[in-house]
Length: 282
Image 1 (cartoon, one colour):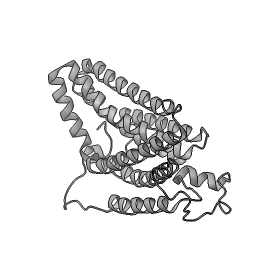
Image 2 (cartoon, helix red, strand yellow):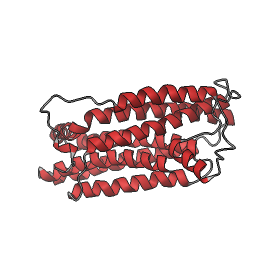
Image 3 (cartoon, helix red, strand yellow):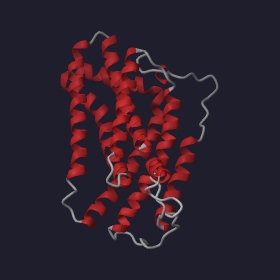
Image 4 (tube, one colour):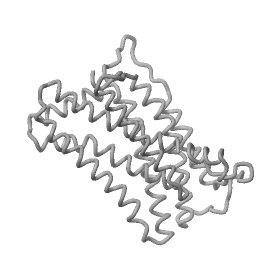
């Protein structure tokens, strides 16, 4: 459940920050008349993201078992690729996200209502579609018929909405660069578990071989229905009996990606953090 809470929190907070930056900028520049098309674009983005998630969940139920596993495995790998790109992108742009969005909003204001709707839609829609895909893949990987993963995601999104509101009101400031660094590192570990589960799906679909080649089996020591087995499953998508291919792919992903993400790229001496580092409403 924690892993899915982290996904909802991280992805939801990104979307909340984008909304805060757009709304605060329009209010501070006296362009409240542009808020309606911006909110319209945001609403459209949310609706399409929810529809996309519903399509993934309900549109695959009529497929054969092999087709479901093939589609699930393929989409799990795609979602991991998108999330990996996203965490690296946010690490690079967190410090100047505000300036980038302000520039796009200025251009949209000059072009008219349609451009405002499109700008808000694109700014939030990318986050929403990525979130829907990764949440679906992660819930599928850790659900096992339980509602706990979905509850974790919804709690994470709810927390993100509350934090976004506090940012907007100026009641909360945090170092966003540090926040995204730590949550990004944890998200890489979660993504590694989703990737391993996706590989298992492809093996069950007979697209990849080696389903019977187990790397190890600690089911007796870590029963899946035990409290600690549930915790490991919920946080890391841990599987007590992974195949050799699953373990190999997991290691080949998590070690280099985590090292590259956590490496400290020093800024030049005297470089100053941007205001967006602390709060989007500044």
